[in-house]
Amino acid sequence: MTRFPCHDGISWHPRSVIDRYSPGQVEWTRYHHPGETGLTGEMLRRMCPRPEDGQVFDQGNGVTLAGTANLALVLAGAGGYPLVPGRAAFGVGSDAAEFDREHVHLANASGEEPGRSWYRMMDAGYPRVTRTGVIEGQATFTESEACFEWHEWCWATGPRRPEAHHALHGAYGGEQPVMMNRRAHPAGYGMKEPGCAWVFRAEVTIGLHTSVSLTG
Image 1 (spheres, helix red, strand yellow):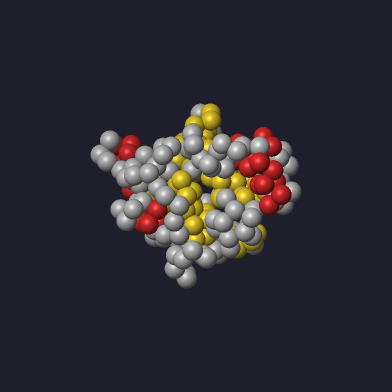
Image 2 (cartoon, helix red, strand yellow):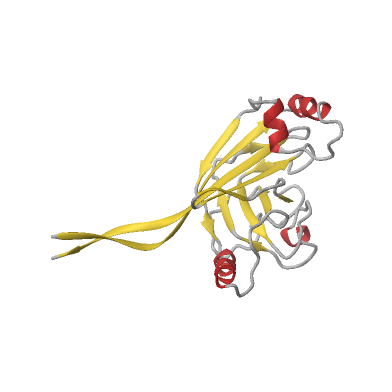
């Protein structure tokens, strides 16, 4: 009996971590960066190697139908929106509902509102390819952003530079963006309080599903 490996499809596997910085750590970091108007994960990690409010780890999510269609367009050079710095957004929301490929934004059960969903552009230089088949994204949700119970997250892209907003289409100035993927964590990631800064990092590994076929 001869066994031959067969590559049946492409896999998309994310791993994520949320670094949860306390108000004191945020103030300390801002104090030492007086000329900076923004706050980034790199700044916080440099000044505060250990987030006082801990870290939350997770893995897995699903690619939406819109995300699959967008990937096909980009790969074929037929349009679509690439997931690149300056256009890629990170979103978080409060909806713990299971993944549905037809979802086009977060907070589907209750609707997008400032207390239920929030999108912001990824930190400068993200997303980036860190090694073969691995894409890393990062966004820093600052003191007054996304102050609600976190249960879900996504990556998104669109036709222009996104601005911080509670609605995905609003983040892209009313133009039609694409939510590429979505992950809902049943237990949640925690309650983000005002004054805290949470840095959401996700790493997606793109690979091949391998199965083995037998021949006589």
